[in-house]
Length: 275
Image (cartoon, rainbow, N blue to C red):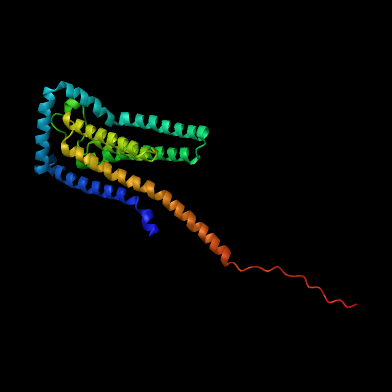
């Protein structure tokens, strides 16, 4: 029962990862172009037709709303790798400095800055690998962008959306870090809600600006969820495995000591003396 209880924190991450993988694979199969006559031909199905309808509708709206284009151009920058890398540097350094100050000024345990440093390093590693993963996935699917992508200054293949995937990974991991550091429940809920809203806004901005199809954005979120869920599961399980290994080692050492036969020191023998 106790072991089952310790494994519960891993279940949500694995479920999110598996769900993201299923959604991503389904969309990728639906939108991946067909190779015919030495060229790639776009697929024609329910998903791609719905993508075209959404793209054309949003294009008509942004042609009549220059203010909206300006706003979403600003929002989409929060999902760029340029912005996210600098955000990680500033937030990561701030968390480490604040945790060290708490140790010095308020005599908090030394494990606080150590934990913050490890979480920040994991955050940066997760984002870096996620960026490389997005490039590999785009090269594999080879989907063309919408016809209006020039206005968004977008280049390369379309699926999955790099901004959407990067935003989901970066801000999802940031939310994971902050909910472990914010003591109040309402504060944690506010942070998670704000970051989730930002991620959704970034995804919508890619469609509104014509840089991606709807399925590109959903696929980016799905791929990000798959990778992030897997990484969070690893973060949760590795410390537990280390502690379990330590307990096993200590228990084995105690068992060895108990099983060793007691060595009796020889007693001196004094000959009988007669008077």
